[in-house]
Length: 418
Image 1: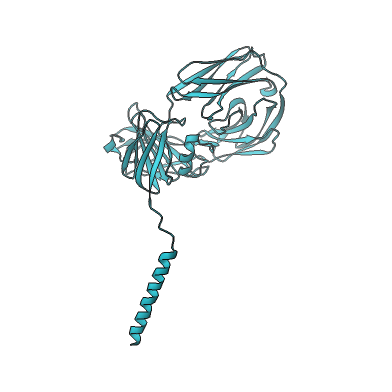
Image 2: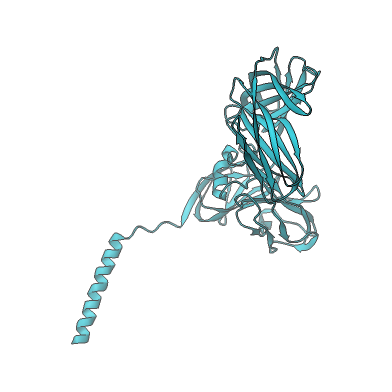
């Protein structure tokens, strides 16, 4: 009887606990999502014609605006963009439902703005800058030397893309290789369409600019042959791509050194002051810092360069089972790996990942393969190093990654496919 009573009590307690737990626990979070994203080119413009997106064993073709939708996606997921004109772009470890995915490395059109100014005095030069003041996605600069009146600003974009912005001119005197004074300034609105001509003429420049200084130290943990460069930016976008117009460069001996630049005051539009520090050996690494006029003691630390580990240089027999591995390097550990065919044929493979390894996907069923005994190079072109996750990249890519303030370029290694 005692055993029967104990059994009954246990059953009642299990029943009560089960009822309480079902009424108090949170609902189970779904394990799948619907991914509705866009595929864009390097300048944040939808790619045309359509490309194929592959996620979780399912594919979708992009619409005219670059959009696509794939349902039933388990997170985290890897997205594959298959562009028949370029190759495959792989973005690993995503969890967001509305990503902007990269699907191209190039631009469809290069436009040049011809800028005419009053003759530049001897001992002086002028920097001419175009900056998109609406979206901030297009910028470029050129220089006009002493005794000349015409310069050009070359920019990349998408053919047929209309851009609205301003052209800026800033004229400055050079003494002993450094800027000694800022003597002239002007700005003028300009709207143009990529693929067409664009011309701007300045009949005069205003004077009366003042100047102050910015100064600091450059340190490098990943290279030598350092250079500090001054850029002036008049755009809402401010990153390593949209740094503004070049003004002056200072060479630094060794792994550390100082810089000091004269910078203008009194421009009509607010000028952002960007100092970019470069390490040129063994490969190019750069980091930018935006400074306030009058800043002293700024420190710009150049990041460690990623080292490629496997496959080693001149490796053979590489296929879709081969592990590509590399060190974390500097920044926040996001990598932009390019696997590039050595010849005119073959497809490019691009991997954007927070990890330090990957394998080339087997997409032969879709027409993308490494081929047989084909030669490739691979390198880490880490344009994404300051972003925390691939989710961040694919959220910001439509806005051209405004967080990117540094890049590194690893060595390039060769391999031959199986």
